[in-house]
Image (cartoon, rainbow, N blue to C red):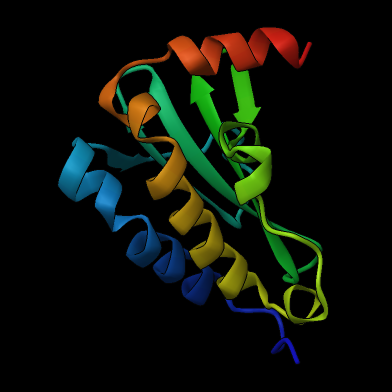
Length: 131
């Protein structure tokens, strides 16, 4: 069963640990979130490209967005092919927020390397189809 909601410190540390590959492999760095009033949020950026992880559901789950420039936001899930997207299951229903952060990290590493390297063409196509 999912544990109780993580503290702010646990959330931030989990995000930093899970997404350290952005810093090590793609020269991203931690920056303030797009909404600085949102406490449970961690953002990594390189130039005008960034990834933002936000706590949702009062500590139950997390969301992950890719951002390019000031206005183009896309949920990371749209970069993941349909066949590779997590499926609803009892096990996933019991995942806690920190588990969701690690899952987002695995998906980002596997399916968004082009964006992290600076190739935003697929991201731009997907943004255009999501409008």
